[in-house]
Image (cartoon, rainbow, N blue to C red; front, side):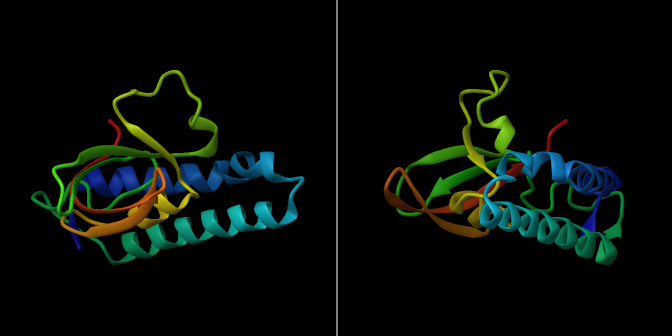
Length: 147
């Protein structure tokens, strides 16, 4: 995929930051071996997937600035067959209760089913996940990385 230098730099910094912090991120799960290893495997796969993408990326001036959904990105969606539009932010577990979050966003922990359905999707992709007890089908209309 052709991406901008800004997107490449963001994804590289993001990948390195998550890799550096992953053990601290998952430390609250250390008393539950299954949950801890599940989270460790999730973050290792997440880091590996970004690394694989960056290995194949082509950097050009007019490339894509937000190629896919990552942890920390804002995801704008349009409901399929509905007029429901939403903005989601995929966050780390520790950020779910943060008072600094914009309350117009629907926050999802990076390891839950909705986040897993959105992560690595691109604009125009369809995602299906369960939200508030119902199945949500939506199309991703826009992705924004944090400034």
